[in-house]
Length: 199
Image 1 (cartoon, one colour):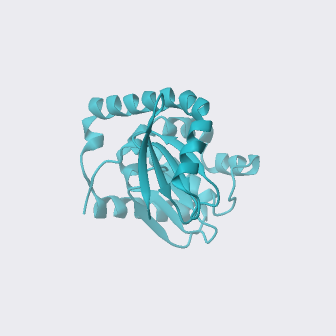
Image 2 (cartoon, rainbow, N blue to C red; image 1 turned 90 degrees about the vertical axis):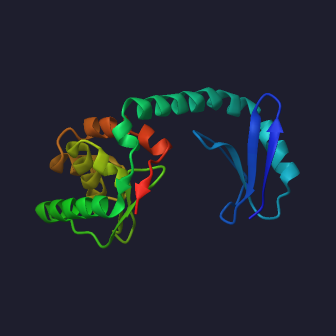
């Protein structure tokens, strides 16, 4: 995979990177990752740079938001040092799997396989095959939020979208689910700079 970093006046450093998955040029502005353009094979870097320049107004709109999120994440981690200490991966996985099993049996929401990872963008996910991914950082959260995140993915085994039907189903198991979802998102700073995980 080829990549190139260019500096564009008024915008700053931009990483241009070839991607096997990209079908079109894809521009992103993300905290701690900066500005990145995913380029399909066969598209030259000069075209990608011109693409970035054409999107300069959009980038300048999102850069302050990115900087604010970075600052908030740094402040959060400095204020709550326990969230930055290493996690014992095996211990965290065992705790999450045990709780997942308990809630699955309690609410009759079976799943297929479970994976516990130090993910960078989400607290959990559920595949079409009902395989559940859980972020090991969930063990750092208050238990009600850890349980909410697990239940969120278990309900996805029945409803794969975030439709009204999904939220109504989730509310049957977890009252005030939307409020808990907002609380969970308030901890998303922890995902911007994933904490180290001990083996």
